[in-house]
Image (cartoon, rainbow, N blue to C red; front, side, top):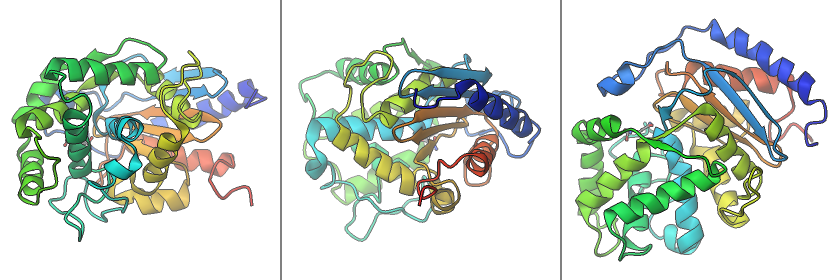
Length: 319
Ligand code: GLN
């Protein structure tokens, strides 16, 4: 086993779980009513190792929308199907140093990276326009959801239509980002603007549980092969790129500090999820809706910091 004393390890995880549960910092996202209604008390941790050992504690079976944790996944699919050269003609690899939805492009007039809204919208336009352009919107949605499900070990995923409709209604900033990118000719030729935006909102509105997201993390930790089904879902070179950018850009404008303190590729989402990947070891999903000022789950970030105090998972711990 990759973690030999798994029971003992899980006991430690549970201890940190209870410690973080007392943390009542942060505010649940309120830009749409469906997220605002989420209880601030939800707190779940799921773990899946690359050899399929699993552990979970707390609210691990309650569905929540994947939101920005979809960004590394759509990026990975785009890399796999189009290749890194094509993808990075359109989007950079640099942290923006700004908020996740900041109205800003890099000095080449491209979105800074695929982990922030502008970059993720752009990636969605590549998947819509360059991958199977003959597919209808319905087919492209199914195609993408099927990828997400295979990353999660072939478990059925949900789609929250109320969140999708609200996201689309309350999307002034995302439309502004989209128009700004269109003005700067960021999108591939023949892109259909409205369809691409809808596709981005749909990807954010897929519903997962903590347990499912931990399996997705484990598939990434395992170089793209799902440890539960043994299916090769993504190529290792695509996963390498995904993890690199999760490491440098995955936590919005906290990414630099997080890479320094925790040192593990992680992506956060506005629903309160953290998708944590410990390469060649395991995937961890942390979920708790209250967010700090930068948009990361308070309990999730605390958990990561505590975990790294206790275990040497930081990328540079083994020097
Ligand atoms: N749906 C959200 C948005 O586009 C996702 C952002 C996030 O999770 N930070 O604004």
